[in-house]
Length: 220
Image (cartoon, rainbow, N blue to C red):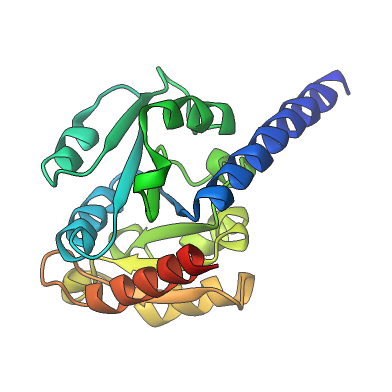
């Protein structure tokens, strides 16, 4: 019973800071996405392909979450966008206070879109609001088509699903139509994209959606 009480207090404190983060983003007209996935689904590669296409049309900043290294932040920094690395030292997710602290290293007045790449984990990040506008869950075809059934909370709390590595489908038993169907059973309102960072398939559709939503936020 005490464990449940402690967990509730932790989440309540996180949610309060997330509300403060969200208000700060709204004041500056910044559109914020929280990218989540299991390890190796391709979040960083999608982010790199996104930066290639959008860095000249949107002012983009990145917060990278990682358990131990700054390898992903180094990859992103090559695109000359502001990037902050959060190393959780074993923590399996980012929390709102970590985002609040990282914002001290970014100038939100010079930002249209903030991308938060969360720690690779499909369980814990679903419970923690960071103040983002949307959660974007990335599912790789290599993980199988039953991932939404195994981790429903993440797909329920997300607004966008990116099915990545579709170029590998000829070599896999995974069925992308079944993956999409399983996800939409849990969350019928999901916006779904199918992408390949190798061939570039689907990246234009994803980037167009991201640009439109970022500009709507900036104009509001």
